[in-house]
Image 1 (spheres, rainbow, N blue to C red):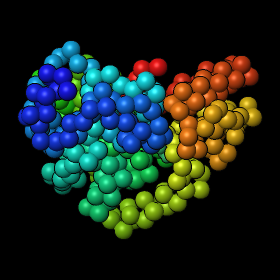
Image 2 (image 1 turned 180 degrees about the horizontal axis):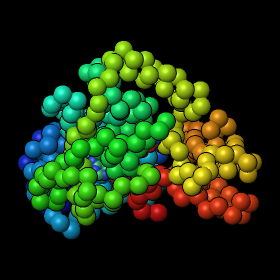
Image 3 (image 1 turned 45 degrees about the vertical axis):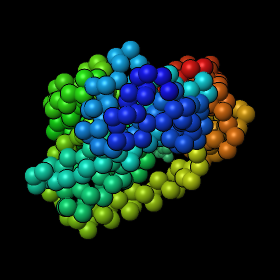
Image 4 (image 1 turned 60 degrees about the horizontal axis):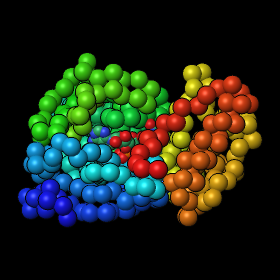
Length: 300
Ligand SMILES: Cc1cc2nc3c(=O)[nH]c(=O)nc-3n(C[C@H](O)[C@H](O)[C@H](O)COP(=O)(O)OP(=O)(O)OC[C@H]3O[C@@H](n4cnc5c(N)ncnc54)[C@H](O)[C@@H]3O)c2cc1C
């Protein structure tokens, strides 16, 4: 390990790994290695780590990696992984829930429903973390993460934690602009009273609906493209005849055209080149330029 890495390894309580393959941390199950990967033991450990990390080392954050394509060349610097860490979930006042960034969206949905707090049921089918849902303004079936945010807690490179109101963020469809060099460590969600049994039943129905329409049980990243205004990316891709299109070990799902599946041996380059091909064909045939929803990171 280099000097900075040895100094950090000596002070942190969490896992600090060198040359760790990110294919284990993303739902597409492919991609290169992180120069270093850090899974904090808790928020204090994360703050200590950030204080110690030289400011010149690039930092990247991952939750459950369910919306991220890591290129085969891997990621420079340190990747901080919050899944399995930052995992406190509490009701701070009636119908006000604090969830740390590494809590899964599904866990938050069920926890809220069991408390008889309504609003976050849609999160039950989103296979990401609270941090990822805040970063992406994740949503489905009419629900959106930021509709329920009362405030968020962020951390910066000095390890300082700030509580920020909604007005500090620019929030739009699957896109959030946050203060530079700050990352989410928790969200405070303001919900409304609801009937516990009905909420749990709504979650069950919602999951059934997803199982019918999405290729569950495969390695994918959910919707690859954002829906363009007044249209659906999946419909446009299907109308262009692209369902089933292949590139190496990647193919456009037959079940939902906005999903790209890794059949098991796809490289990140296969997936990225299929994304570009689909985009070019849709543009040529319909004049509509699709914007990727997935985050593509790392060296080529
Ligand atoms: C089968 C399937 C179905 C899906 N369905 C939906 C859906 O219905 N609706 C929907 O919106 N999405 C959906 N997604 C996409 C994905 O689950 C969401 O975008 C989710 O919110 C991503 O969370 P994550 O923790 O996996 O984020 P990651 O993929 O780990 O990260 C996504 C982005 O968020 C950033 N990030 C992660 N954590 C933090 C943090 N703590 N602070 C700052 N930035 C952070 C990352 O740097 C990256 O840029 C689906 C994905 C799959 C695989």
